[in-house]
Length: 115
Image (cartoon, rainbow, N blue to C red; front, side, top):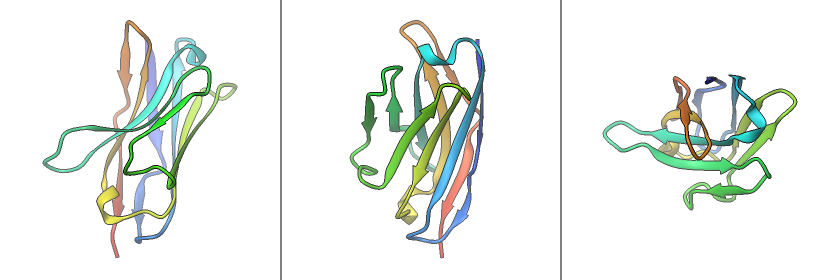
């Protein structure tokens, strides 16, 4: 079992930045692929970025060049640095931990981009 707790969401103006953090506890953090997903009102949950245990990253086209995922295995924490935020980035952002057998989700943190 893995417990995930997100933090760092909030209200930011267009063009601004936020950094989300996801603290994991429970099982061995290092063996999991960690990721961020988001869900806007009326839309399906979508992938934002992932990083596997070897540091390989994957980004949605809509956030490439603006968002950066990173992880600190010593702190069991994964981060999402979000720059040049746009109103269309507004969503609830969820942390995810998965391996070939299991997947776990955090409770989500709201990000609102608005002037």
